[in-house]
Length: 254
Image 1 (cartoon, rainbow, N blue to C red):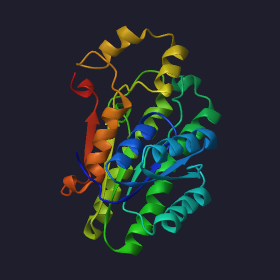
Image 2 (tube, one colour; image 1 turned 45 degrees about the vertical axis):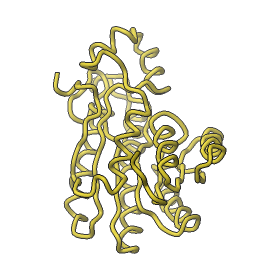
Image 3 (cartoon, rainbow, N blue to C red; image 1 turned 45 degrees about the horizontal axis):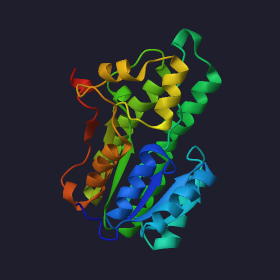
Image 4 (cartoon, one colour; image 1 turned 120 degrees about the vertical axis):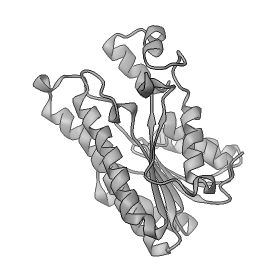
C-alpha cells in the first residue's frame, strides 16, 4: 500500500462520496487529514468514523466559495497539524439541468461559485502556505470527464469542470519551480449520492446508463477514485504535475 508517512492533507467536500472515501483511504495510509465541508453534521460524523478506525482527522466547516472560509481552512490545518503537505480540492455542487437557451442565472452563479471559484480559492491559499513552508507539496483538483467531453443539458457544470483543468495546468506551470505539483483527476460516473440524485432527477435507468458511460459497463466506486487521489498525494507520483488523469472506465476513449 502507498504510504503518506504523516503527510497533512486537506480534503474539501470530505463528508461524503469521493471526498469521504479519499479521506478514509489517506488516513489508512498514514495521513493526517482535515475534512472541510459545508455540511457540519456529516463532516463531523465522517471525521469521527476515521478517528474511531484509528486514523488522524479533524473537521472544519468550510464554504469554498468564500475566501475567508478557505483562508481559515488552511490556517486551521496549520494550527492543528503544523503544516500542509497535500490537498484534494473536491467540493462540488450538483450539475445544472438546462441547456444554454434556458439557463438559470442563479444556478449559473451557484455552480461556478463552488465548482470553479472554489477550486481557485483553495489553490490560492494552499499554494501560499506551501510557498511559506518552502518544501513543495501536492494538490489534486477534482474535475470530471465533463471537463474533457461535454454532456448534454449541463453547460454550466461542463464549463466549470473545463475551467478546473485550466486552473490545474496554469498552477502547475507557475509553481513547479517550487516543487508544488498540481494535477487533476477527471472521474467518470461514480456511484455517489450526487450521481444517484442526478439519475433520479433526469429519469435515467442506472444499469443502461452505466453501459453508456464506461467500457467496463459499470459505475466507479468512490474508493477507486480515492486510490488515484492517494497516489497523486504521495511521493510515488513525484514526477507528475500538470496531468489530467481520467479515472473513467475508458469513457473518454470511447
